[in-house]
Image 1 (cartoon, rainbow over the protein chains, first blue to last red):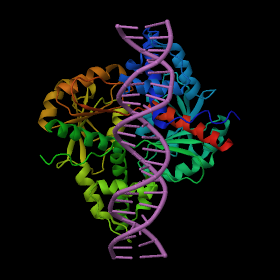
Image 2 (spheres, chains in turn purple, red, cyan, blue):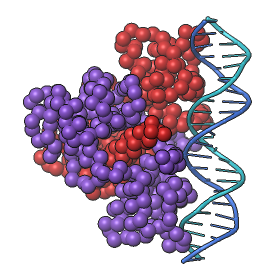
Image 3 (cartoon, each protein chain N blue to C red):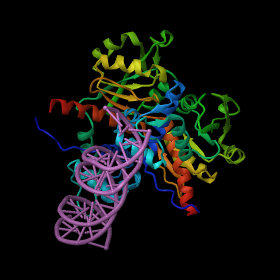
Image 4 (cartoon, rainbow over the protein chains, first blue to last red):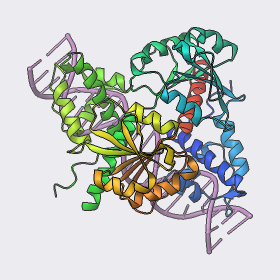
Length: 216
Length: 216
DNA sequence: TAGTGTGAATTCATTCACAGCT
DNA sequence: AGCTGTGAATGAATTCACACTA
């Protein structure tokens, strides 16, 4: 029911996530109010865009003295987060997988990496960055037991397609894919590929672009 | 001179990078021609969009039998790549930094990570994933000697701002930033932040969105 | 005075739809 | 028949600009 709570664009969701992190930061520093132009800076955007984004959240912030940091954090959370903490699994405990585990350690977020998986038996049974590592064969069972519905895929590119299939069979709803390849999955699992090569190529391209503009 | 070689959007650049990787893949498999609808699949787009993107490249591909894989690779390269291989440095040899080094090892691309830097003396002087690790103090010198103008920043978030400043002083033109924070740099260095927390939050959000649509 | 909220205008990206080629 | 190339139409995201508020 409660149909169409309004469709929010991917770009807005990205920015909301970034606003929220910044808001938590300044909250920790004791700030209780914030202006749209301050938030604009952290996403390299404009104040008007921030205000639009916040409108979508069903905002509140009121005039002349900006937005209240605390309620903004809560309202963004209401939109972005699930009601309970989302359990996430990491699949592929290589260099990158371990780095991802490390990266997400020790912060309290509304998601939690609760298990890791690898096909190498040497890695299984151990605790890596605070998470137990299971064998791929146990994936389905552990997923069900822990109600895991999101996976981070950090296996070598040759295996990505096959492992993604396993994940889909285990009932995963979303995959954050670090393998530089397009994953073809049959049903409506949400796949988001984070393509580091592309990001670096893009960075290099636009650094030259900058240069060209200067030379005018 | 040769002003305005046409401004190409960020989105198009992203897709071109992805097309190219796929093209190289199928080239290795012996395919010599490709259709726009095949390329569309790897970016989850439409055939029309692919054709537009390729038009921007000053395309060529001709009718009825699609595009020639080899010349497409060359033409995308002419647009995306610098004339010489771009030397890149990795800054911050922690878990993530090492993972990045590993990730970019052994592929021949038009960029090359040629050096790593860390402030921990224990890591300096060693070879890590095939790259020599230098102390941060030597950064400026090594950057100049190796004509490095792009850096990958993989230091802890508390240090990111400070290290970014050092990089700018060393004359870097672009930074791919893995630290979850907005970097404020004075001049026109191109900064691209790859925000893993945001990407994961987005993934989780849209997985629920998907679900809602189904329930519709 | 210095901010917010928001219609209207604008800019940018995508898709449609169809002529033209092979 | 089945593709490409591309103007024109559409749709989405951003910015403008201004009334409004504390």
